[in-house]
Length: 388
Image (cartoon, one colour):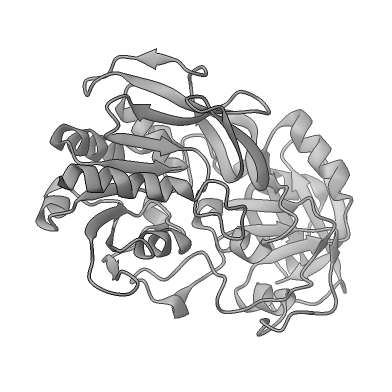
């Protein structure tokens, strides 16, 4: 990859079914490959770009103008392998937008989105009809793709061959590629720790440990390869399973650990990828969705209460199941607790004894909405009850 320019040269987005979109360069110039997916969020592009769950995906923004609030050093949703904020990075494989803002208008900005994409070598494309592209992906489904510019440009047939030569997201084992290598600790906000939480990093977002810390918890963020022995050594009061990228059907190690944690009776909370891991540990299967849920405006129904939350989501896989379905597990009876109001997809599962629960969406929700933040309070109450 070479340095980028703003709308100066030709760039091509090539989809594996042969459709090609022609635009201009945005960010770095060169070649990138990944799965083309779309996100419907109107705000929060920095949080999206730095979310480890987007590893190996080319993200299409449905919002027509992107970049007007620039880039800052505070809103990144990833940290380095040791928890160092200065090592935060963009995780998306590529970025596709219609109309990149030429002017940054935010007092919090420390630079422009264009400059940050160039600095981190993220290849993008601008100036295409993103509405047509999203309609295509909704009809045909998320698929392998590539963005090409500069010296990476070649005849269409050659570019299509490069796209088809990359592996599919189905069967991709990616959590280990985004997880912390050595672990790190996030201390509670203001005072002594009320509880200790072991957070298994499958692609954790920065705001998740922060939400725990605000509730008086010390969070030990552990690698995806962590063992039950590691958790017991910490004398953890509870366990958290994070979000993350890839196919949950490949995450046998995390599923095995979850079964061990459930066998110990430790309180457990999971989100996104963690929801799929808990579901698998309870005996459910997963499947690849046609185009997934990605955005910050997706309605979810909690069936016990009838409450509907507008949620942030980012997933291309889901658990099999039906709304309100109860089923037997080795750890007691469980229920499908939440489903999506749009399409009925499973959005949550829990053990009926209350010792473990998970949701498919993001209650930590940076950059919003915050409808589901109460789930952190629910986990806090679970830890309080376990202590009594």
